[in-house]
Length: 165
Length: 146
Image (cartoon, rainbow over all chains, first blue to last red; front, side, top):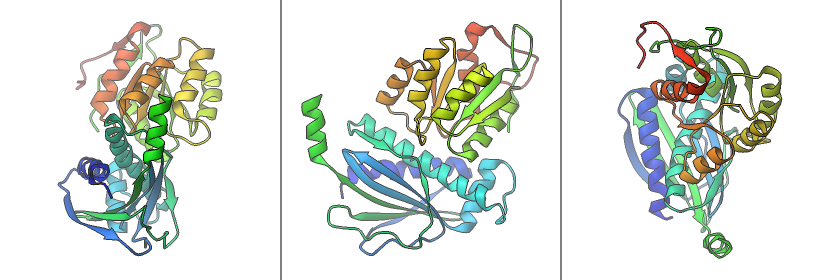
């Protein structure tokens, strides 16, 4: 997987999470995911279409999700406010992925982002040769956030748009 | 959350009336909280571009805060349709997807400004004052505004 496609997601997650939690975030090890994706907490999925295609799953453990929802809502959010916690995770996914998409588009990659959807299944599709998944973890004092990124660069789309353009 | 000097309409001294358009209930609540600190009044909400068009016609707000990436109809298309019908509409795009091409497209189709998510209240406050400047709005009192 091309690291120049991944780095904006790491930078964006680092910046948006640090702002949302108002505390430093540690970027943990990155690893390739060869197995099917397994959900760890409350997860949102965002799909990309165009020159860069694939999906990103933003997965937050419950403790961290409650902390994020409370910080963003400005009130204490409990486990019983399931809808609000899920909404908070989706909105954060939207912000992190949207900021990374902005950087990549400004670098000349042309693609489109779809609205985030709640990822409810326990397991996702297995990565393949042309869509490897990279897992990155971010930790703070209140818990962990994971991003599972499976993207591929579609040179034929880029060439097509260059010819058309 | 920080309190700002209230922005009111010069014509009648009433709070500025907002329509918030975002598919995320959470994002709408967050923006509504900010608007409250600006002394504004949220008169309506919509979760997609199609509802935004009908809500604008029904409510004729002073300002619309419009997300871009939404189901059914995206924000830029909705902004274009609203401005075509209501040339005086003041629409501020509020989105996490803020690349140059997108911003230019939104402005060309009638949006007045763009604010990138995550939204900083002080940035949104300044943008709102700027967008409403022709309307003759006033920041009243001696609050802790920026």
